[in-house]
Image (cartoon, rainbow, N blue to C red):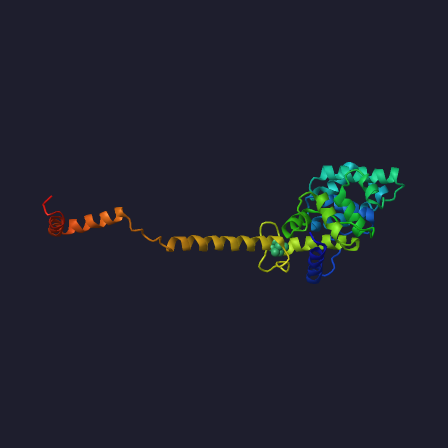
Length: 267
Ligand code: SF4
């Protein structure tokens, strides 16, 4: 995608929704890491309900590293996939305490060394808690990037690099938030509101729809005109004979008269 078009899309979304904040409640970068791990396949609303109590009981990496697995599983049960999530949180908390002296790494490379932390989680923490450039690609960002035409790929890493290549780093985190809020409100999966969409003039999906519509109506017109225009009937000997036979059948007397006058004898 061209840089100018990506910027137009960003500006339009910013003017519609205003600046967006992180949807996950947190007080520290570590708490955001935990909340992001919990948010996989779960709503932000549910995660926020769970973390309000969770962070009172275990506020930092050291507290999580020393908590009981069963207790933690019970506390996060309603977020779904609670066993795997508890495992990731415990391993990440232990790694932070043992390898990083209790401090969360503040680079993509460092964050990716933590168990259970992928690029999406690392980008959330970088952009929303560490004030560093980060473009998280979640399910909405992935879907909208393809629809709008921000990237031609469905691979989150390629989408991230396509968008980051054309947008200034200070917009990355905000752009991701804006795409998420647009995906939740105007452009949900399977029922995008294209006629009412603020991005309709910029979106590849609607342009593709219009082009398909134009092609279909052009094809319809051409097939209609073929049906109405009749090819001229050529005067051939065969046609002439057919006509004569038809006339003679209608009037046998006329036929007899013609035959006699031309040849002079009856046939
Ligand atoms: S025009 Fe349609 S497909 Fe494109 S972003 Fe808007 S709602 Fe989604």
